[in-house]
Image 1: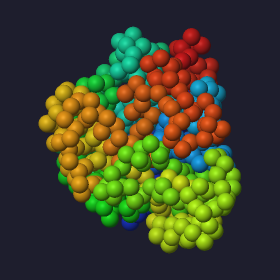
Image 2: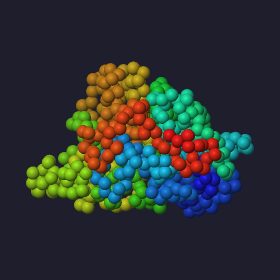
Image 3: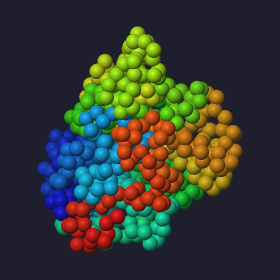
Image 4: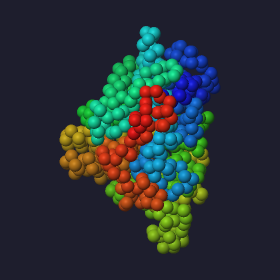
Length: 538
């Protein structure tokens, strides 16, 4: 792997540890635990796992070779929706993610983006390897607490490998997984952490599925987790549902999705409109509990996505939903309220050239109505007078304390996603009734006039499921890999995005004929890894 990984495995996590409960805050950083001692007790193994929970949303600068410009899932979640044009930027603002939306980073082997995602995921794998191998090699007792540790380690390793293989290799359903090059397997638990050569996509999926099966068995006899930052049986099933969906194992995807959401009630209208800023929401299965001492400030999820966060990224660049998606939302669906189609375009630097005043905004004929519309948004949604507004802007993600830079939680997995996975899997198996039954609870909760019976063919169901995913999961990081699974390209012509801003990201051919959907392997990895050569570059 990258030489940087050899500097550290456990010392990698130079962070203030928390047991995911503020009442049990530890002030001793993980780097105070010598590498030789980090696995000496189950308690220390739990600390290592807590470091991984933190690494999910922390700036990667906490590990040697990391970057302060990327803060784990707080960056990757919005970025994957930006890349595919589902989370639309309205202006360049301060430049964050502009290179991503123009397809100038994942296609460049020396970019910070391709290196940091690769590097972070392999740190997860290396840490999980060390835990798993320690327990197996020394025959340690597997009581309920140890089962919890092992369940999490196997689930994290599966999640990391799946993230890598679905991003740095050709999509399972559009390629030939038996022969397509995947990513390297990493077995080592000590320096220099040299990986194997690139395995095939199928070999990596086999490893992922083996880890998930083992994780689920451990979790069945594990102690309970303390917080949703930690993985549990439901989260393991949720990861399995995602993996099975991506490989077209429809029956397994549907089964795992049902098990993943068990006990997690769909949120109601009030909760859906509350800002998506806490893991306390009833349907959150897995998410990062961020406490004030662990804030990433201007590298946080809400900095990139929230129209109420007090940062230049959103003050000058409110994020939009595609007008094509918005126009499909029925008036009876309360989610429409969170996307402001008639928000005044107050930004003179808006990329569509229609911002600055009522004189340029075609939705307004006079200054009074233009100003009144902005005032109403400030009053209802917590957008401040310093924030610009723009037609089709979202107010789905709002920090708890609008107009501040206070930290908020990051959601990784919700029950809604699991209903949609089940529905898609049933539709692909042409079980019309099964897909309708999966969609019905979600649809009826969101739309008081919802009638699932009108989607009575596989084609109608899949079209509706795609719409539901783009609406329900907007801004939650799924769009990029959805496009790959569905083999759909990008055409933002009628979305409201600006060709001038998006450039190469405005139109892209579908993944099966366009290898630019496959991320470049970091050049630093090829240079450092004796088992990779330039011929391995995507």
